[in-house]
Length: 293
Image 1 (cartoon, one colour):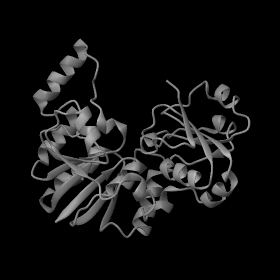
Image 2 (cartoon, rainbow, N blue to C red; image 1 turned 90 degrees about the vertical axis):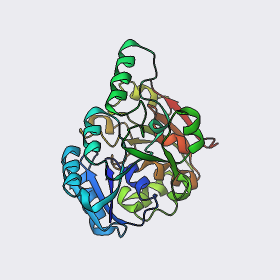
Image 3 (cartoon, rainbow, N blue to C red; image 1 turned 120 degrees about the vertical axis):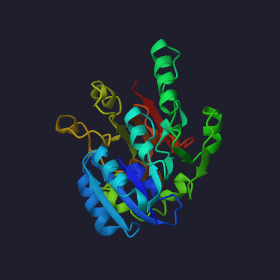
Image 4 (cartoon, rainbow, N blue to C red; image 1 turned 90 degrees about the horizontal axis):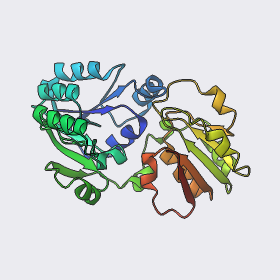
């Protein structure tokens, strides 16, 4: 039998290859991040992890493919089971074992936390349609894969689904992930030589560039400045690029960059908008952070 893994951004690819599954493995890349089609081509030609790899421009087309082949699929892994349309598709795939896997801090929080009338209505409609106010809450979902099960139990105690761990802890897997080169710039080695032992400012964008970023950068004249666009930021960023010494491609796995920069003796200041990447680098004495709200 087959297992299918849906991927809509680079960190998800990293995580799905950290799940133990003995079936034939099929990877589906969806065109929702920068250079997704090129990444798909590289995975198809360079990775020995998968039995099959497919690319779709829209997630609805990916689900149509899965539905047409569901007799041969026993396990389905996806980043989210939340939403009315998503659950319509999952209902048609309910003969499979459906799992959600962690892709960041959102896996540990309810969607609508504020007690407002509109949120009460949305939550009520969601429950009527078969899914809850958190990832892994669909009635068609069997379980969720997490790096920190105790945190999930604390934050979402009413989750009754199976909680599974990944094969390796996040930082451990960074060191043994075989497809690392696919998600790093070609000149990554030279970049590491450039920043070795220096103070480095990394700006992790949201889906937009913060208008105040230039003012913030001017406060740190002695830092090497690195721009890492959000993977879903598909628009050109030439105007902002001139403010930075290094511009990483949007499909770069920033977790690798941070980990390698620490190994190269860098002191990091990370400017962000609530990035999930930082949850894997807690209590690092050589990392300071500043969040733009």
